[in-house]
Amino acid sequence: MSSQTPTKFDVVVVGAGPAGASAAYLLAKAGYKVLIVERGRGAGTKELFGGKIYAEPLRTVWPDLDKEAPIHRWVTRERISFVKGERVTTVEFKLGRKVAFTTYLTEMAKWMTNKAVESGAILVDEVRVDEIIVENGRVKGIRSGPDTIEADVVVDAEGVNRILLEKLGLAEKIKPDQVALGVKEVINIGKKAMNERLLLDEGEGLAWFMVGDVTAGIPGGGFMYTMKDTIALGLVLHIGKAYEAAKTGELKHTVPMLLEKLRTHPFFSKIWGDADVLEYGAHMTIEGGLRYMPKKLYMPGLVVVGDAAGLLLNTGYTIRGVDYAVYSGKLAAETIIEALESDGPTEENLRKYEERVRESFMFRELVKHRGIEKVMEDPMFFTKLPAMLNILLAKLYEQDYEEPTVLEALLDSVKESDVSLSKFMLKLFSVVSKL
Image (tube, rainbow, N blue to C red; front, side, top):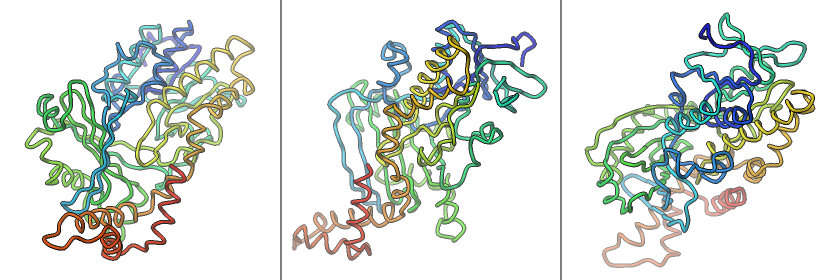
């Protein structure tokens, strides 16, 4: 750290992502001395995600979000495609109101952190925190190399790879079945071509999920989000299942090869044509928030927010992470302010943060959808279901003379895709009941 950086703060925030930035902003705005420590070069440089953020929880922190934030497009259409070979079955929904928007998280995290800095927080980047200092059972600050920074409270916003929490004994080491790998390319298609090819009006956006051959049957899926003039195209693969498939030889492609196959797929590639790929990136993400949640979200002098706290919801048809991160930062800041204004960041006072999290919409949603990640790990939904849907529609639409009834086509598709109809209906019911 710089020799000019003070060595004592009211609050040190580890990580300049959405969770850390929202906590730092509210604390600095309330007049507290706040330090944000970021491992990357500048805020947001290490952030990577698909591209869609739900707006309303963010407005509770930044009421002028719609006017000031780097919003690219409002998502007006949601699309899901089931892919088997060159056949593609697609379902699309036209939204009736603005709920979520697309953006690059690098831009969004930078904007959020700048709001915190404008309010008085100090940002130091390219600094790795090696340890959260604990004395007599209470967090007292952080250590980076030979440097130590004292703090009344530390906000752990380190993200998915929570090494600091592991050292404290609050979190276990990551297991392969708890996380997924996300990879993404940014394709420079241009605003005019994008609007014309996807039938979008100015400012309208599309969020598109793909299931089936795009992941070679590995649980996960493909995604596409429209930005202002570029497209974010990527894949998410369950790490545990991908490792098993690679070990047995079932997975014969590397992750970059799978992404290239998606980009060059005859159906999807017509959208971007020969447009240039500008960027490529990869990032780990959570599979099942409650399974990933630490033993506790607090201890004297410490609160845990965002991905590090397991606050991410993946229902299979949508993912909510950034808004959960921001809202957890808000709850953390409110709790810390109350604690510092009373008798300090004691265990009893900071326990209120976890209580707030458990009373919030985030936790209610995580509980309501509990177990969906285990159901969605079933390869049947990524192999046989896409095959069955596409065979069914081929039976109905690819006939030269005789037209089957829907029942005949359904029974033939079940048989040809080797699906037990009774088992399929049971599994489908188990999925629907948790969505």
